[in-house]
Amino acid sequence: MEAYPSGDDPRAGVARALRARALFRAGGRDDEAMAELTALRPLLLTQPDAPAYLSAALDAGGRSPIAETWLSEAVETLLGERAPAADPEVGPPDAPGVLFLLLQQRHRVRRELNLPHDRQDDLADRLENQLVRRAAERQGADSDLLLWRRDEFDRLLAEHAELTDVYGPDWDAHRARLEKALVRLAGAGRTGLGVFAATVAGLDAFARSRNGDPSDPEIRAGYAAEVSARPGARVPWPPERNDACWCGSGLKYKKDCLPRSRS
Ligand SMILES: [Zn+2]
Image (cartoon, rainbow, N blue to C red; front, side, top):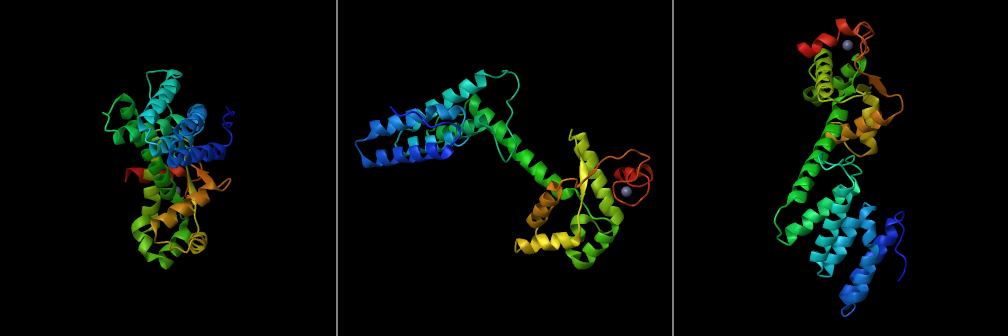
C-alpha cells in the first residue's frame, strides 16, 4: 500500500479522494476506492479540509454510514484529549479548528442519514453559534469603531449625507456612539480596544477599488477592516482620565468623551 500523504499538503488528499470517487463511479472497483479513502483516514485528525472531502467521497460511493463512523471516532479521539467539562475551543471565524469541522460534517452526514440528534450534534450546534456570533462581533465591532475626526466628519456628511443615519447627525453624537460601543465591548470582556481614524478620501478610494459605494455597509466594513489592519492604526481606548481624549479634540478624556457614555 502507498503511504498516505503528509498533513502538510491538502491537495494530495483531495486528489486521492477524487480518484476514489472516480473508482466508485467506474463500478466494480469499490475495494480500490475504499483502500484510497482508508489510507487518508488518519488525516481526519489533523487536516482541516479532510472531514469535508473524505465524507463527500464516501457519500458519493454510497458509504455515508462509514463516513458517520469515521467522523464520530475522530471526534471521540480529539475530545478524549481534552478536559471533558468545558466546550472545546472553536478557533477563529476565518480558521475554525479540525474538531469543529469534524463535528460539522458529522452533523450533516447524520442529518442525511436521519439519525437522531445526539450530544455531539448539540456540541456542533453550540460551537457553530459561537463561531457565527464571533464573526458578527468582529465585523460589527470593526465597522462600528471607525473614528471620523472633526474635519473628516464634516466632510463625510457634506459628501455622503446618507451616512448621517450610520455615524450620527453631528460630531458629538458620533463620539457618544463610539464611547458607548467601547464601554459595551469592554463590559463584554473585550480587551485591546481602540478606534481607527478614517478619512473620506480613504473611504472613497476603497469604494472605487471595489467598484462599490460608501453607502454600502459591506464597503464600509471592508474599509474598516483595511484601516484597522494597518500597523499602528489603533488609537487605544480608554486613555487615562487626565490624558488627551481618544477623539482628537485636545481636551482631557474625563472632560470630553468619558461622560458621553452616560448621556
Ligand atoms: Zn473626546
